[in-house]
Amino acid sequence: MPDPIPYSDKEFADRQSYIEEVDEAIEEGKGLINLFGVTGIGKSWLLQHLRHLYQQRDDVPVLFLDCFQLPPQDRQQFILQEFSRQLDQQNIPGEQASSASDLVKRLIALPETATVLFLIDATERLRVDTEEGRDLAAWLQEELIWATHQRRRAVTVLAGREPFYWTLYRLREEADTEELEPFSLDDIEELLTTLDVEESLAKLVYRETYGYPHGVRVLIEAQRKGELDTLNDRKAAAEIILRDVIRDRLCAEFPEEQRDDLEQILFIASLLRRLDAVTLSDFAQRLAAAGERLPETSQDKGFYIKAVLAFKNAQLVHWDADNRTDTVEETVRQILTTNLRVRRPQRYRKWQSLAAEMYEEWMREYPANFDVWLTEWLYHSGEAQPARVSRAQREEERRSTVDQVKEFLQKVKAQPQMQWDLVSVAENLEIRLSRQKELLTRVVGEETFKSVRQSVRLWQEQELKLE
Image 1: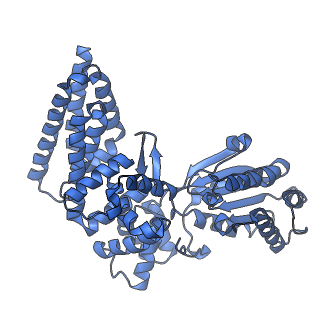
Image 2 (image 1 turned 90 degrees about the vertical axis):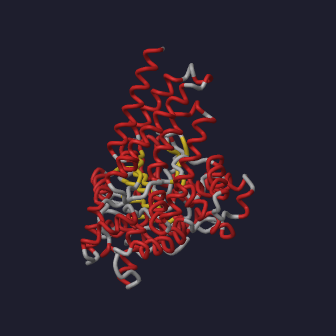
Image 3 (image 1 turned 45 degrees about the vertical axis):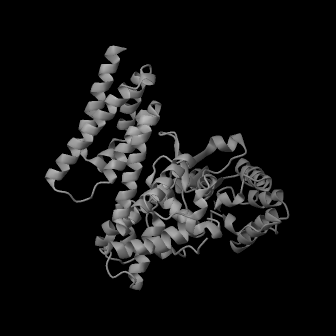
């Protein structure tokens, strides 16, 4: 993992809603706040800032633990020693704790008006998927956090790449779990003002990073150092994003011997909103047949299973409950696809076109999933079109897309094995279009989306009448 951009309280901006949430919990004297999000989203910066804020107050003893720093052995003793050292630094009376109960007794002895604040970062490093990690997480929760919360005013804020694994039901019930969001355009403007950087650059920074905090700071630092003469140079900005965000941050935890291969496959996976080893393998083989050079190891189909697992281990792939599929985390996906589109626009459109062809074939081969394949085809065929076209070309594309959708609808109606399923498929297709209205409207245009949806609704009405 590369060294993160060093925290500085003078350069901290935004995240005010999260700070207010913690402040409210401090005032009430109780709370369990569980923050999660992909690497580089700003979790560590936020916890470092909370540490800085509350260490200024005499009534809030702060116990900070970065799980990234945990040693391989004697981890309980390391935590006890670290917390004891921090209490000494804050002039909290008591001796170094040799057990969790010793530390809790020291905290209980604080004045009633004090509120203990536990800040625990990088909880994924506890590795709760291992027996040792589960034991440490259980000890941390039951003997330190829960024991303290039961007996005095206390607030705990945890941050990790995925929601923290609570072993105690009582803690699970009380915890408030939130995903840390990327910066908005307003947030970036506030940050630029704080850093004394021209505020007008905010839109350009957001366009390249989608508000991904690490990417935002990378571009600002590049501009400060003179590596980027102007943020209007999109290709230069994209090369910096590739180097300092995608390779040195997002891909940093891939196995070193496979890092280059997995980086390439991650770019391919980012185009596919539905992701599993079969889909990724099929799409990659189409790219290879079209002349794209792929890793030699990818000839083995087991490679794609390992690739998806590597993406999941790095928390770059999440389960999308709405679409019932794995997908590359949305902010990461946007960064990767934008980066590819800016650096290699022809390759980007070629890949999107091949993805559309794949789903068009799947509509014929697997009509039971027609509702899924049609929405994916609509997305990819829209992205395959050039960004700048004339009004006449746009109208021609709209008519062509609508005509193709009508043709697909007729073909699925003619499939003998589909006669009993047409009503449910039509209903599911309307639901999917409704859920993905914003995305598909952006890709194919509002008029095209309206026309496609109208065709689907007419088909749905016809099937209901025939039922």
